[in-house]
Length: 563
Image (cartoon, rainbow, N blue to C red; front, top):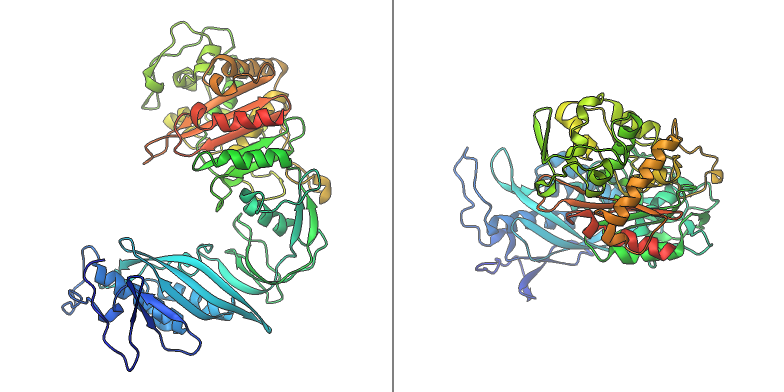
C-alpha cells in the first residue's frame, strides 16, 4: 500500500482507522460509512499536477488509483450521478446505468466499501435497500472497478463497464425492480423431486432458462423482484419483458415478495445429476453432459464454474472428438475403412500449413482403425484434398443435426458450428480446430448418433409440454458407415487413447478423446466423449491437457454410475 497520509479534516468529521484502512463518513442522510484506502483525493497527491495541454502517460500510481476510485465511489454513494459518471471514461453509459440504479432498480441508502486494491483493480462491497411500493429488502453484493487513463488528457478515471454496477450485468443489461417478467417455477427431476441450486449448484442458469421459457405456461403467479433484464429486453413497467436478443435469460437477484410457482418436469436424473455435480468439482473449468442415445433425453448437466453454462452454451474447438464426424464422412465417401491401410505420416501439409501428430509420431503401414484409436491427425489431413469445402459442413448438418441453430432443448443452447472453410482452415476443421465450435451437449449428441445411427435432438423438457418440434437430421448413417464407426469407437475405448479411462466398461461401449489447442493457453482443452449401453456423455476440461487424462475420468465415472 506504500506510505499513507491522513486526510485533511472536513468540518468536524474525523477519519477512524479500521482494519488498516480509513473509514470516512460521506455526507448525506441515511448513508453509511465508506471505506477508502487513505485520505482519498486529498492524500498522496504528489505527481498529480500536470502542465496545461499535456496528456499524462505511463503506469498509474497508487495515489492516482486511490483518488479516481474514491471520487467515483463517493459520488455514487451520495447519489450524485453526474459527478460519478464524470469520474469514468464513458460518461453517457455510466450516467444511464447509474440513473437506472435508483429509478428503475429502486435501490436506496447505498453504502460502498472499498477493499484492498490489486494494481489498478479495486474491489468493493455494496450494501443498500431495495424499496418498491412500500416493500423494503436489504441488498448486499461484491463488485470491482478498474482505473485507467482517460484518452484525451491521461487523467485517472474508472474504466466504465456495466459490471461495475453489478457483476451480473453485461453491456446493454439493466437492473429493474417490479412485477417479475415471468412467474417463478418449481423445476422437477424425472422422478418428481425438486431441483434447487442448494442441492445442484450447477443448475442456476438452467433454472433461469426454464423460468424464462415456461414461467407463464406453467401456471404460476409473478412476484416482485429485483432482476437483470438482458440487453434487448424491453420492460414495459407492467413487468412484461420482450425476448432478449442474446441467449442468456433474465436473472432474479432479489425477491421482495414471492410469487406462486408453476411446475415444470425435466428429464434430469437425480442420481446422475448428483454424480455430475460431484465429478466436475474434481477439476477446474470442467463441464459435462449425459444424454440417452435412444431418445435424446438429457439426464445430467454440470459445470465447475456456475456463472456460465459452458456445457450447453459453450463455443469451443472440440479437437479430435470431431474426428467422429470426419471419420463418418471419409467412410461414406470410400476414403477410409476400418481395416484398410491408411496413411499416418509424421507430417501432412495442406493449404500452406504443415500439420503434425502429437509428439510427431507416425504409423507405418497401419489401418484406419489404428490411426483413429491413436488419434492420428495426419490420417485425416491427408484426405483434405479429396473433399469439397462444404463436405464436412453437410455431414455435420445432414447426419448429426448440428450447426443449424434449430435445437429446441427447453433452455438456451449453442447448437455447434461447422462453417464452410477452404485451404488450411478446411484441413484444420477435419481434426476439430479451424472454425469448428462445439460444447459437451453437442459432442454427447454426436457420440449418441454414432451409437444409434440416427440423430435424436437432445431435450431437457418433453416436447409435448409446449407442443414444440424437435430438430431432425436429413438422413441417418448408412448401415455400413454406422457399423464401421462404432467399431472405431469401440477399439479406441478398448485399446486406444480412451482405454485407461474406459477400463472395465465394455463390451457395449465406445469413446473418443480430444485435445484442442487454444491461443495463449499453456495447456490445451481436454475433451472426452463416450457411450455405454443407453448412456452417452461428453465432457471438457478447459486448459486440462490431454482429453483421456482430463475429461476421461469424469465421463467414465458417470457412465459407471448410470449403468
